[in-house]
Image (cartoon, rainbow, N blue to C red):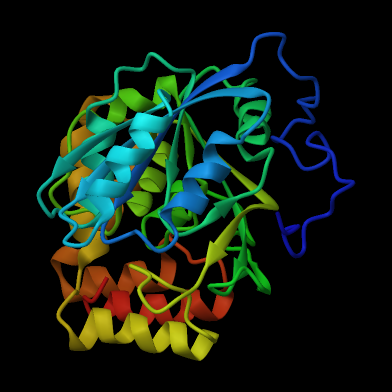
Length: 330
């Protein structure tokens, strides 16, 4: 399996681990139990390779559950064969919901029997050690927590294209209000966090954005700058990476201004308040409420754009976001 571009193979978990210097390098005597959730849609091209990389994860116990999201090719037949060959695989066939609702529907149905729940895309490849790494980061945390990481970007033949790191200033609720840094295929949740995903939201920006926002508001998000996923870019990605920062902002501007996908972040923040309610800390409730209430008037938007705590990871991005916020497009 290709080595992930940009990952320091000599780096130990405690050097890049959770804040506070917790030593998380010692493996548990009992392997962590994982439920991996995978949503498929017309995924025959790369699915077998991804499933193999998930089931090959060492030092953990893995169970893989797959929900097919309305495929029209041979994906369901492939799932039937994979499940027949390995008892660790289960699957269900559902109507087309789109990736966000498909993953959130699976999360809502989890029992919490495993130690951790991880999300997986159909077209990537996992580096061995991904799940063990996440467990070492999450095991010291007693409350709700999510782990996510950078990704090694590759082409459809797994040739390296670079490293995509989304966190420059660290995870926080103030960031989650206007930006997602938790790439879905890297997310791992502990059991304490599952409680907050029993209800499928009506207005998620995306499933990973919802997870980042919910856990930021109720617990702790840990971002690993090392890469444990080969993030394949090809012509049929649900969400790919723009080739440049200019391309990324062109796509965002189309979403916010041209295509009508305006105020998605405000709708998501409003649903955070309604869904989590009293389970939010007073500080989190105040942060979200201020963001939502600022949208009710032009003066409020301008004031928040100038002084509000919400931010994006890159300073130029933050400047553009504040302009969009003042215009009521966030």
